[in-house]
Image 1 (cartoon, rainbow, N blue to C red):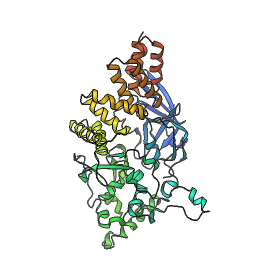
Image 2 (image 1 turned 180 degrees about the vertical axis):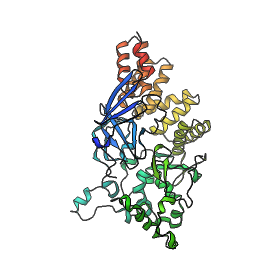
Image 3 (image 1 turned 90 degrees about the horizontal axis):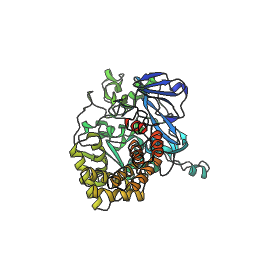
Length: 465
């Protein structure tokens, strides 16, 4: 865990090519497609390299993911979400929630989507305080106590130490007014966020951070109850060398499976019962299947359409946001309808936080309720303008109604808080062009090309006379 982020070194960056991109030894990433050519320097990395390692570039204090990732199993490949490789994409923002599970004490700039002080965290990798709590109390007591030992916590709070990064479910939704990055060991993590999984346990795929929920479905966990947890098998302070891993984990299995017949006591338990499986959300990466299947088999690709909270009850606000995110991926009308119904219920019950309002406004607008969406977007813009999705969509409604000054104002605000928003840049540049402000139009489009170098819409604006 100490190796999960930092400033990259040359040894982390072997030369290679994939799609429109070439990686050079000097931490340089070159891209070339039609008339769009250029390079970016890798400024930071995330991922230990055991399964994969992704690289980030920065500009003006904002962090973005490079569209290529080094996979331990195959070498260079396109980053998750970039698999179609149709266009050059350099604009995926690295948000604090993502960076937070790979670094210690993220230095995010308030009011931005992906702006950071540099370096973006006080400590690369996962430090001691992530599992043991703040060290100031330990120092105050002159080294006598003040340190959280997860083993000694009640099971729910013990498990929360691991769940903060290893429980994401199909979707994880933070509660209104709660920031999961503020979680501290010893607290109940489930008061910060709720994770959703499919009702049908067999339909929940292995993904990058599915360890926690898949372990919960295992026969071992069901039989052992609260006694079995991540620390039963893993020592977070050390990893056994590859040649010793089979014996190391076999010993863990035999601590419970004492009746195993002698002929099988020297076999590699993991090879059959904890196979390495391709991640559903990162096709180039493989992760251990923690569901510990009794009989090895392929992970089902089908999904049940029922969703439930991993722990506790699913409230309408959280369930609605989860279904909206799922609908964005599935493009299934029924998923959108479920999300809209749930969030209308949450709104009627008094929910007014910016994340919920942004999602509800989008769903209302999509369903033809522009008049209902407008005041919701305006409320978000007044209370939390870092919700750039709300600003982009609000500007579109203003423009449709001839309120061009207001549209330009909110689009400008969105770009300041998250540069690289192609939709906002194109709309803003087009508005400038329509109002005979060609210099501003070209400047806006040119600035956005840094993130979308082969964007037809931006190039069309720049070619306008």
